Amino acid sequence: MKTIVCTAIAAFIAQPAIAQAASDRSFSITTGVDYTTGKYGASEDTTILVIPVSARFKTGDWRFSATVPYLQIDGASSIVGSGDGGPIIIDPNAPRVKRDGLGDLSVGAIFSAMKEETAGVNLDLGATVKLPTGSASDGLGTGKTDYSVSADTSKTFGVVSPFVTVGYRVPGDPDGVDLDNTFSASVGASVAFGESVAILSYDYRQATSDLAEDSREVFGAFSGPVGSANWTLYASAGLSDGSPDLGAGLMLTFKLF
Image (cartoon, rainbow, N blue to C red; front, side, top):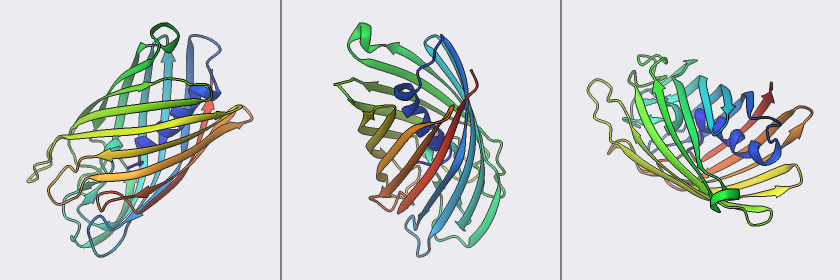
């Protein structure tokens, strides 16, 4: 599921290959639009529009980020936004409601534990905290704090860089709901075309409740420079009822220094 924070991450994945920092420090802003639609096991589609704004600061081996999204959700009232893990599906057959507003703030840090030039492989270790800034009563968030950790490894073979990402998420439980901890994984590769990069991956995520299926989808993106900025155009297709049927988005990243 590529929604909310994941849309900004899609842009960040492509950045290192096409816009290396000239110094040890850099700061960038990413924004754009993300659209998904799917039934999630219900009889009607739920559509989710996300406009995220992300700030990213890199210093040495560390990268820090903060993302807050504007959300518009049109679907079952108990399909709610939940930051970088995609929507929480509590009851896909709840009454249909349209709502919008700011979602949950996610802050994260990534440490470059191994680098290919010295260790033969890249390894990044990350941690993210999702803070309950979105309205739980409007279904824009769960009203609880979530914690997640991740590990990403990659290696370059000419213009192709295969990667594997695994993650583990501990969601906060909303009142009256017991959400499960979830495992996620992505397997894919990026391919460099001069200053542009293409990405293709298969993404899996366990469901947070027994009322939903695990999410399985394929994801593709293409990123390149435009003036002093980078753009990332991407699309996804769901392979299970736990993921959106279709998704698409466009991100723009502006490097400030």
